[in-house]
Length: 166
Image (cartoon, rainbow, N blue to C red; front, side):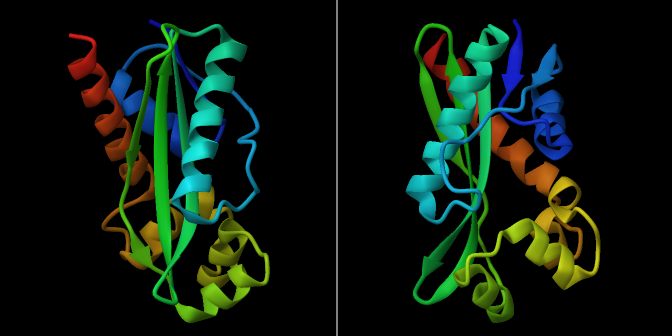
């Protein structure tokens, strides 16, 4: 089985490798949504489109798309993270991850159109946070990293896949 991940971001690729333990290839593909997805719907669409594009481009058995976004709920800005698994037979599975409220100063920058990765890097005074611990790692003081969070989403995808293909 060949697995293609719709990203070359090491956080996302390593999360998939941790779950599949097989040949996993990171493929740079567009999400088809804004650089910074807003809301569950747009974030899910980005994950699905990454999964399909990666599978097709790599001619893989399974494509995995992982997408991070933000969601406004009751005037608070939250992280939202979604994943999608597609296979060559047309199956499509979706799963979501943890939610975490972000500070108002980050919300203000996001509302102005900035992207979460650079905003968090500046906030934490660390480079490329999105390729390392992620916002979730910063705001949980390392208790949960971005890789851990995406690994849980991939586990949810894989568990559903095994259930539906048994």
